[in-house]
Length: 268
Image 1 (tube, helix red, strand yellow):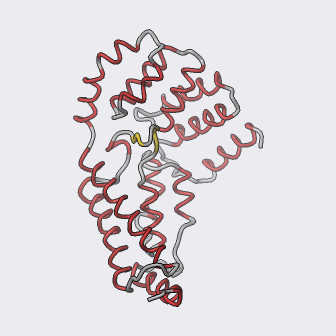
Image 2: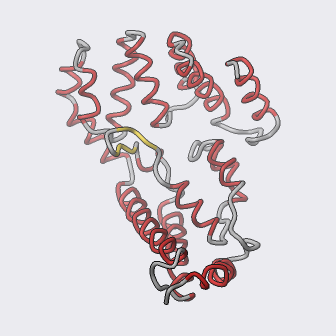
Image 3: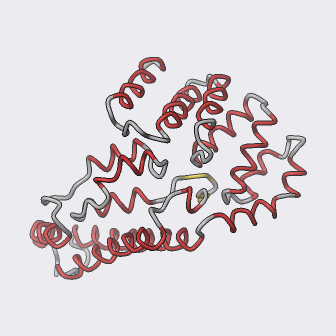
């Protein structure tokens, strides 16, 4: 599909009401999406221009967009822009090893010298407790899903109540995070650097599993959450297509269906 066709398609999605009319991040997502397409087609000059337009629409660009914008700035030798992006990422919590790729720029020694200040800014401006709790919840969610799939194929024993309790614990944990800290997002937690690259936090993964387990939490608020830049339009589209085997009326109903479906495979 040609870039112009994809761009028109993206624009149509916005105009068709994918996002609410009064949507702070609407123009940001449009121009960042355009820049991503430019980069994919190796039109780095256009990508550089469109990332600048996107970032002018908000004070808080998202981490993976900043990462790609920095790569674009490096390719176009836009020294001033690259430094600005690096500082924003550093203040958002990205560690120094990520920036070693930039040591050929003249500003890098000064950037490295000031890095302690950037880390201090990160600690002062973001909710590190929320960050820690979300990542811990993701580990719990991952372990439960591994256990569930082993049970599903008959490798281990699990009772119905254990299935219900495991899914309920994750759902309650996520709800408690939102109640105590607000919806987990980069604006609150900073940027996420794992396995040597900038990624999105696993918020959507946890929500997907919650939806599969029968609870469509925050579904009626997804448009507002996206418009506030806490999730992406693609995340909303993905979540809108996720459900379990039942009628999404709760974990107990969903797990009873799954238990009846897979218990015959159990060796126990």
